[in-house]
Length: 328
Image (cartoon, rainbow, N blue to C red; front, side):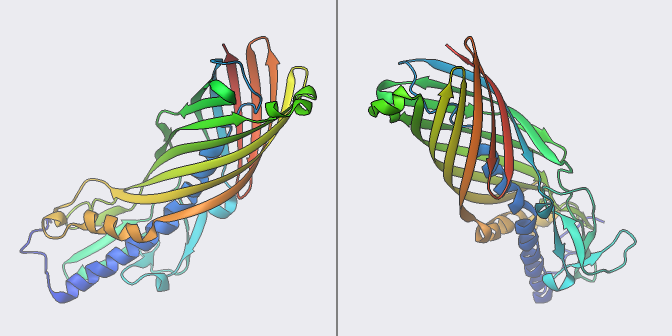
């Protein structure tokens, strides 16, 4: 049955139910996507600096990188109860009302339940809870390059195309500036010790399938959710060289700003009430900023003009990175 202005009651009670539905959808959005955007920060923070040492003027380095993020169990699911919702009740696949239920975050598995609510006597909303990426690790490739400039300054850029996940996609891109300052201290240079600082800015975009709706009037326009993250990173790195091998330790502090949007094909309900627009306005209430402190250890080996490098970053999460670089 298609919804029309005639079949849809705009009574105060129905409008009140719509408001409760919007509140519940906002609550679920936050719980579902936040672990994934937190993880995106660790992925974008990895391996910005290949080496803190000073390179020759206009030396260019290009590399192919592979990043592997290991999904921790604690961030794969969360628990919901009927008492968490004002509009919805939780049902299993048999249509039985249950509480509590453990549902996946965007980093979780493919288990599902249903969220059911009644707008009025004629219009029910039934949503299948979204599933996660259902992957123990998230692996994606990207390109990174740098060029050394004057006074020990190096310009760095990284870019990944949109990487398809099982239930969404991920993309990161950004640029950074590195400055070597160990060259100011001759004793450090003499002992092959390198020090540098880096400032970087990156953007991370992640998209996931979200609440799949079953209604008498079609889709509500919330079957996709997008997280947009802007990260500002400050990093101090020190390394020691032994012939062709270099060991580097880095301290990373970054600040990330998170924004969330619901997208999807709009339903006929938009002719009466702009659900997608209102929900995106509500999602501004869960915009957030976070500061992370991360340690990274890295090893780099040279053979001719090629470099093989691996790194591990750790803090709240663990992220690994492997790259092959060529220095011109």
